[in-house]
Amino acid sequence: MFGISAGSRTTNTSQNNLVLGITGGSTNACFGGTWGTETNDESSDTTAAGTGSITSATAADEIVNATSGSENCHLKSGAQAINAGATLTLATDISNNVRPQGASWDIGADELISAASLIKTVNGLAIASVKTIDNLAIASVKTWNGLTNV
Image 1 (cartoon, rainbow, N blue to C red):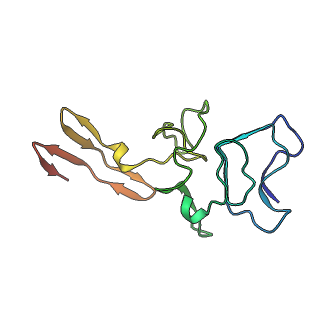
Image 2: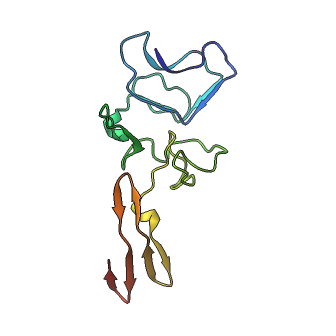
Image 3: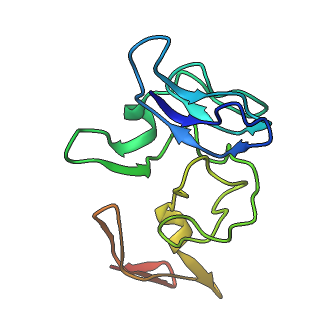
């Protein structure tokens, strides 16, 4: 079983794919087949190939929750996939967030949104609206003349 397989079609391209947890020996792998181009992929085994690819990643280090039945495949803070992707033509991620949020794209379908990216400063006034990300409520914060009102 493969997470993603190109078969023998050497014209296929794989970029920014995050494949974790495919186990079971030589016939089970995250990436399989012969790819025409493969860059900036990430796998939990050693099959992610090409420039910018990451291997031997663990789900616990990359996504919010890998527990069966409670999966939350959003990237977690500190994941290797953050800012490690190739720039593609899609404007948004799977949650409709604009890409990139950081220095470059994140690997995978999700772009990490940090709390800091929600805060805007206008004339020295820090303003953040209430927003829920991965079941975490980010409260409204306003600062006037050094005083903070939450």
